[in-house]
Amino acid sequence: MANPKILSLQGKGLKLDTKADIEPYLKDVDPAVLEEIHFGGNTIGVDASLALSEFLAKAQALKVANFSDIFTGRLISEIPLALQAICDALIDKSSLVEINLSDNAFGGRSVDPMVPFLTSNRSFQILRLNNNGLGPAGGQVIANALRESARLSKAEGKKSNLRVVICGRNRLENGSAEAWAEAFAEHGTLEEVRMVQNGIRMEGIAHLARGLSKNPGIQHIDLQDNTFTVDGELTGIKAWTEALESWPELHTLNLSDCVLSAEGENNNLETQSFAVLSNAISQGLKSLMALELQWNDVEEDDEHLENLSLSLKQRGGKLFAADEEEEEEKEKEEEEKEAAEEIEKEAREMDKEAAKEAAKELTAVPEEKAKEVPKPKDATDDLADLLSKVELR
Image (cartoon, rainbow, N blue to C red; front, side, top):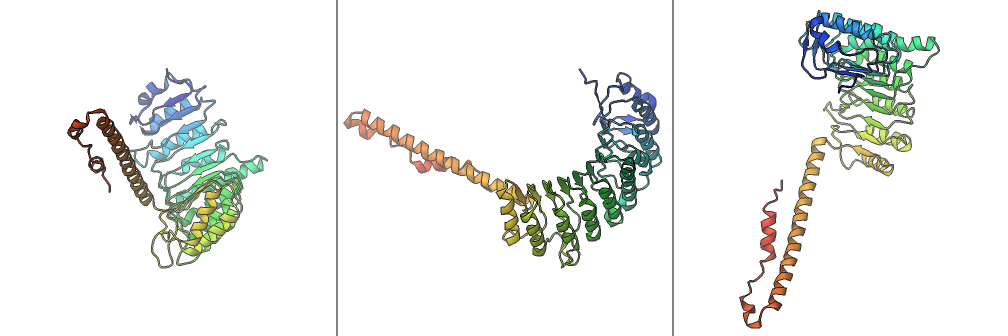
């Protein structure tokens, strides 16, 4: 029996154009008790969105609204209207905890319909906007809406509820970084921020560091595949070093694939950068348990890298510095080596057992027939047979 609190059409690949198309999926659901709605992986047109909006308007306990990947194949003229119908229906949902609009190709032209919701609904805690092609202009619109939301909360003497922002793969670049930094600073309540693969360079990275430093409760930061240094300048690294002191609860920091070297070669985090990070992390950040620095062309014997690794290991944490492919290959080799050693050990045990059995047989037969007892198979034969089954690469 279906859970009356959850409505899920996730991944069904439905093409819902009209009210008649969507009504069969809504008619037996009581919106008054609905807590989660998952429509991802379907495509919804304007008329169907309007019908969905009427349904959502009756929801009184909605906590999770998942509308990721719902506009595949839709015209750019359809998306703003459909998006507005859905977002407007969520404005007054004080029970809402999470909104997911990821994997929808909004671009910079379709973000405006989200603004009233982002500004006026100050209840939701988790915002997922991943892979929407926002660009700098669209990113700035979203960031400004979030900043205004925080300002309105403060004006009412209330603390912001926003805790998690996921906004990666959106080409935010430096053009929107400062607006995001201001929004983060205005809220001051963030615990998790993931902004991977956004083409943000050193100046923007420095802005983000200053904005996020106003969020003392932050626990997880993921900025992989952005750029912290340019032409040997460490402004971005230094800004983050200063900000690190503001995050006593930081548990996970992902800076993989984040820096260009002075020579302009991609993925080369210089020793100076490691030195700055090592000092900051080793002396503080006692809650940090996972530091990711893959794809930064690191030297395994780098002194500062070793210090980082030791510092984290002593507290039960881990440094991830080698590329994942290299780590997987090493793990594979170790597994194969262990398998070979185990088989060799088994072969030796088998050889011992065979020798014992042969000895027993020799003492059991008459002396004159002892010469007829077959010689036990040589251990090297067993070992060779077993090892031939192991494929070492």
